[in-house]
Image (cartoon, rainbow, N blue to C red; front, side):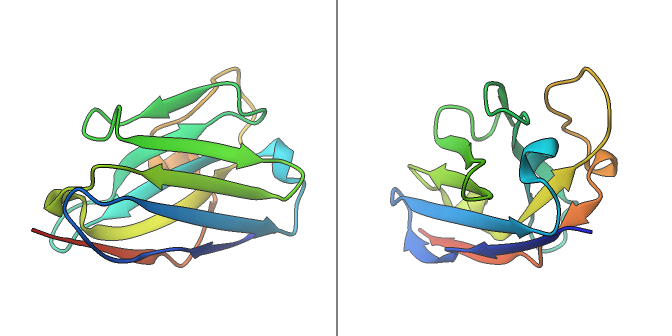
Length: 127
């Protein structure tokens, strides 16, 4: 079993930056692909960013490409999401997730591959 705990959410203004962290425990962190997802009120959960087990490959949603950066520290068992140039449409609950599946794919973008989920952290961007 894996426990994931996010931190770093908050209320910011449009154009500001914010960093999220997700600390993992309970399983070898480096065996997990990691992802960040978000869900806004009344909308479906959507993929934001993902990172391969080693950290060498990343994937981003088109809506955040160039503004967000995902990274990981396999020594500290933590995955990060740096969010720059935030927009009001980035407002959502952000959750980190761990993907333990065995495949040759570097990063999965679909949530069904992710077995482990954090409780989420609210990010609110005011205009």
